[in-house]
Image 1 (cartoon, rainbow, N blue to C red):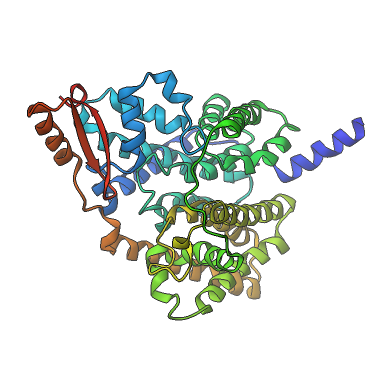
Image 2 (image 1 turned 90 degrees about the vertical axis):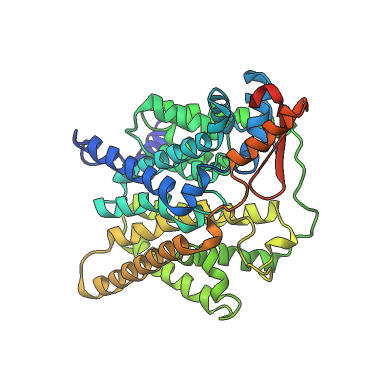
Length: 438
């Protein structure tokens, strides 16, 4: 038994290694600069700027209204959609302490802070797997600039859990992480997402290694979330029958294609170019992944395989569990409905791709192969980011929060006991007592 345990620990150390070099003190300056740059990008690009004065979906119609109407502890343990939302509800409680005019900006800034934090965790934790600093920087940057994450999910707490899933993935692999803050992060993330259960195997492997605080905290939070989901009710999006062929096509379009082109541009190529865009995207991703599996060490190969596996599992689970006719690839906008489903799977796919970029040795044919893939991937991602920033539909143009608040205050001034607050997307609103908006 002892021999078996030692072998398991040795295998765990091979697949979840420690970084070779200690963190340099000046690294904190680089992390601070990266954080500031991430915040600037998320808040100051045209779509991000629009979010500072527009409240999005459940941020208002669920989390703000509950923060105003209900006690704090009741909110934190109240499931919505069948699971807990600890982080969004905590942010709503903080925003409720501010002047009501600041609600939209408060949610946008808090969501941007947390997303930038996920990028920093990715950069720091990937040091044990990616030798190249520029590769780590590029992978972490995708958390911030990925076009699929800068429309429906930009700067709102409602959809932040798609980024939290990826952040927890790296937090569990980060063996020399700061224990307390990272443990708090994984607990709050696990209490805010129904998807983090897929990461339980990584936490169980980490229990075989020293510094078990983070995986233990994560697994404890999973138990709480699991019990909540077992007894909470959830209203399904639809009762449409799942079509396996449609799920396959939608998965291929929403991950490899969206990863390189973005959700908005996918409709420019599909169905006009048929399945060719899918085949080219798969090939572009497959070359560096195959090289990573060939040249990587055990940790690199395991990371690539696990990341690809999570990419497949998450997108298929999201589509199957939430299937409706709107998700079919024949829909007018192809993959614009529920863009959020693409975020974590695309980030997992890029993780496997970057393993290949990092480990391929500099021989001529290998340099040509992986070097060409780097240029192709870099060009595709860069052009998709630029095209996304120029796409008019990514900027919110509905009712601004200050206008909605002015209307609500006019209702109250006219003698109404409660105020109706409209917000984005169209036809969303919530009602609060007039005392809350005065």
